[in-house]
Amino acid sequence: MDPELRPPDWWKSAVVYQVYPRSFQDSDGDGVGDIPGITSRLDYLAELGVDVLWLSPVYASPMDDNGYDISDYRDVDPLFGSLADLDRLTAQAHARGIRLVMDLVVNHTSDEHPWFAESRDPQSAKRDWYWWRPARGGAEPGSPGAEPTNWESAFSGSAWEYDGRSGEYYLHVFSRKQPDLNWENPEVRRAVYDMMRWWVDRGVDGFRMDVINLISKDPGLPDGVVPPGHGLAPAFDSVANGSRLHEFLQEMNREVGLDKAALLTVGEMPGSTLALAREVTDPSRGELSMVFTFEHVNLDRQPGGDKWALADLPLPVLKGNLATWQRGLAETGWNSLYWDNHDQPRAVSRFGDDSAEHRVASAKTLGTVLHLHKGTPYVYQGEELGMTNMPCADISQYRDIEALNHYRDAVGRGVRPEAVLASLAVRARDHARTPMQWDASEHAGFTSGEPWLPVNPNTSEVNAKAAVDDPGSVFHHYRRLVELRHRLPVVVEGRFELLLPDDEQVWAFTRTLDEEVLLVLANCSSQPAAVAAGVPEVMGAEVLLGTHDPDGAPDVPGDALVLRPWESRVYRLPPG
Ligand code: GLC
Image (cartoon, rainbow, N blue to C red; front, side):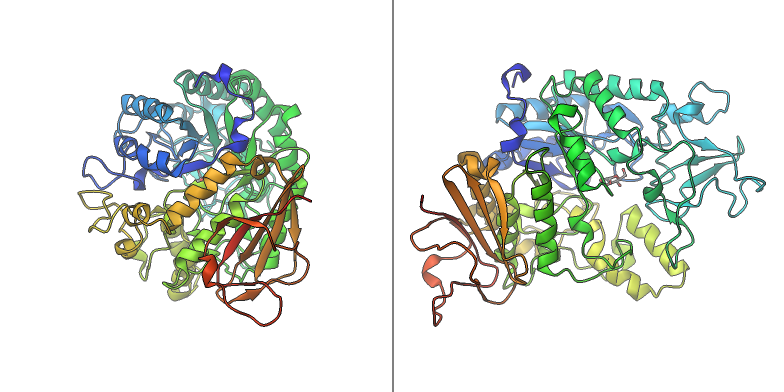
């Protein structure tokens, strides 16, 4: 669509669908998904009704981190196809009214990017494009503990890699093949903006910005605080949310013309606070449309622990967190809403109940709750089918660099392998990356070859073909949620109010726009739940969407409304 014709905040009524290209659809039998494969599935996305397709990276890459390590920002990796394939995908998506958002990974490049190759030479004009530093004072370069700071990479081990040729270290907050760009250098910023303009001119409709709150780093590079039981301090804590972040984002917006072209921009911001998110998404400041917070997906870990230190998550904590963000961005800014993405375990296994009995209802209810909040919902491929974590008993079943490095590191520190495997089985990123389950055939209709990561054996029941054919499936529930958002302005703009905040089973809230009031009641447990006093009367209210057959409601003594396990209902209350 001509950018001139779209309203500046069109993304407020949109639903975004994220595709992880490697695992979506293979077209050439090499076992890895590709762009022609995605194009061949656009009708499926159109049927679901989503407005935007966010593509995880398809750029040229050595694939150390599955494409989040880019060696050429202006080309497509042959594994995924060609630029011509991508242009075709864009055109075909646009023809169906679906916009395309590219992943933008500019906190770091691949170490195989020509910029970094040049930067390895201390005399090169690009030396300062990355964070090169000598060994810490007095230490022998390359010796244990001589790294410039005590930072640990997000993928285990030191965040510094020693380069013997120049006797210095470079910073990599992620893998050693992902050196961090130095945004203090204006030439770096210009090169990034140039590249972004090139993509805008090619017709993309927005950017999902990878760890964008890490781009401004304190050039002093101060040591971090080492948590108990660890040898190093998480680099994240020292490099996130730096003092020039707003300045860089505003400059980017201006230079690339992000607002002018009415692009959707969403910043991935681990460790960002609500206050920061409000500033970044305040439209008057000209930064981003919305951000991905990590607060709600970090609640099920032990206090102060890392992502592998698992803890139970009581419902009041989860809904309280979302409600805080709803209130915090009610007047200024905008929320993104997500349970799942390529870095998170499957929502139905994590927040729902993936047993045969409750998988479908809990997947639907998680969808209901999320999509009825205020903000832009994101659906991660397979979430609309209720895809689950994969069963995994052995480290050889994992492919992700984060999981493999963590296993090596933790076992090396003396943690029992079974304990490490137990947390991987719950929290590893591979769970999100198993191939999309299209049908019940051997490789799920994903590939005619050998899939790069095994297909979840439950594809015999959990697959798109079965779901599209079944009006009671998770797929059709998601389709109805998308449709509701498109049809009712109250879903987009309505004021949010949380009810029964301390209830351990029921997630209840209202959305209000002028005279229109929606009430959402969701039993987020595998037992029946009586709805406590404190919600509006539902007698005479219209049920816009429900997970269960209204006729099968259990009989209970007294007046209490009882919801079946994982039952949810969206009511429109009578005016008055
Ligand atoms: C983001 C991506 C993740 C990647 C990391 C480094 O968190 O979502 O997949 O590993 O950044 O680029």
